[in-house]
Each structure stands twice: as structure tokens, then as C-alpha cells.
Image (cartoon, rainbow, N blue to C red; front, side, top):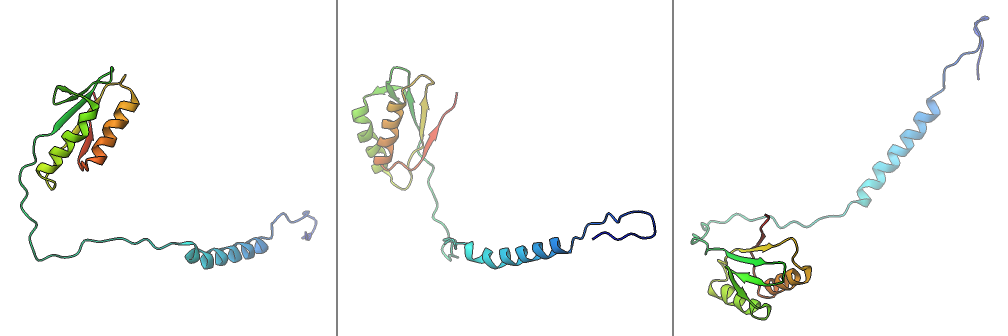
Length: 136
């Protein structure tokens, strides 16, 4: 309600008390419901060990796998058929499963995605752990 204070006209102040009341009620509602909406995340933290980490040997030289625009796959600059690719990867993993070489995949811009998908599937099936992509 507006009251006059001697002839100067109506008072133009807004009553903010109801707004503050509503905001406090909303704040309380959000504070109560926020812990209910959170989900716990299990994290496996590393544990303290008295044993020193094992000394690692030098990693083997990387395998350069290049895919050109015609779909030909090159294993260290020598062509290899897709049917024999997984077998060669299995041999590399079998040499030392804990110290695998890095597989550097270099696919040209006009290479078919299907060939790249077959190469990555072969690497996954051979349990290759270190796969990198080369950009030109």
C-alpha cells in the first residue's frame, strides 16, 4: 500500500520481505535435497608399498603402422595383408606382455575408415596396450 507523506505524492518503495521469505524457503529446500541427489563414486587409490617399483627395461622400438588411401597396410614400411595383421600383433605381445612396443598408427586422410577399424580391432584382439596415432 502506498501512503502519502504530506503532499509529495505516493511512496514508490517495493516491499521485498515476501521475496526474501520465498528465497529462504527455496534455499532450505535445496540444502535438504542436495545430499540426496549426490551419488558416491568408488575410487581405487594407490596403497603404500614397501617394495620399490621394479626396474623397467628400455621399451622396444615402436611399430610404425601406415594405412594409405588404397587400403594397404604397411608394417614398418613393408606391406602386410589385413588377414595376417592380428597374428603379427599377437607375436609382438607374446615376446614380452609387460613391455609391449608402441603401435604408431598413421592413416592417410583419404584412407577408408573400415580399414582403420579393422586395424584397431586386430590390435584390441591382440591385447595391444600402447596405441598411438600419428598426425601429419
